[in-house]
Image (cartoon, rainbow, N blue to C red):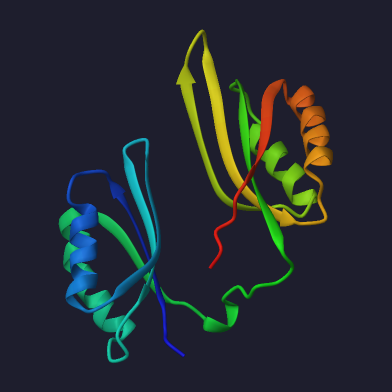
Length: 180
């Protein structure tokens, strides 16, 4: 059973962060299995799942990231992942994209995510933005997975009710799941 590390880094955005982090991982023979990176309000954030070579310890890798953390003013966190907690394939699921658009006001994320959780939908990706149109417009895009027993039509009807309560437009479309 191979070990895996998670690496997260947050700091003021600037060119070269991804290059510096991945260069260290490459130099030590780590393979990047999974990653997500984004910029929010000038802050760069990344999270990676890496597979190190068998001989590499977490402490060795932490030591390498100390200087780059100071140089790029990054908060870097490394931890070993527990293989026992790795998700295992369970009940077949289906994936949806939920789009929310409307006047910006508190409660949109909280109410929408509570609605999804009540229906056993797991959020696999979520992003939000406020854009300026004739006023601030809130945009939220969510990728969710849920049980096959949940019908798309029923979910659309429930989302319509939620959209009326929140005074936003909510749309739903099915996503094709990748077959691994």
